[in-house]
Structures are given as structure tokens and as C-alpha cells.
Amino acid sequence: MEVGKIKKLTDRGFGFIAAADGKEVFFHRSECQSVAFDSLSEGQSVSFDRESDVKGPRARNIRLT
Image (cartoon, rainbow, N blue to C red; front, top):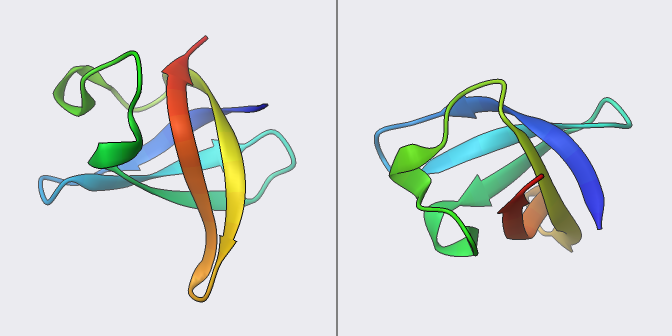
């Protein structure tokens, strides 16, 4: 698992994580495991699994740290 901070959230159900390596990782609300998407806030620390996607890196299994 990797760690990062929520960088941006949208009202359309997706957001971006600023990973520890400095890269931005996309995520969809369906990937939030132990936390509701609506309770996330920018700057909050999370852990996640990174997966390659056609459009770029994507976060899976997002959890609060």
C-alpha cells in the first residue's frame, strides 16, 4: 500500500490523491473502502493501491491512515 493526501475532490464522485512520490493519482468514489467519499476532505491522509490505467495511474482500495 502507498500513502498520500487527498489533493482534490469533485461533486461528480471522483478526486485526486497527491502520492508520496509526488505523482497525482485519480480515484473514483467506488474505490473508498473504510470511509465514505462524502466524508473525505482535501489534505486528509489516505493509503491506497496504485494501478495503471489507459488514462494514467488510478487508486484502488482507499483507506484512511
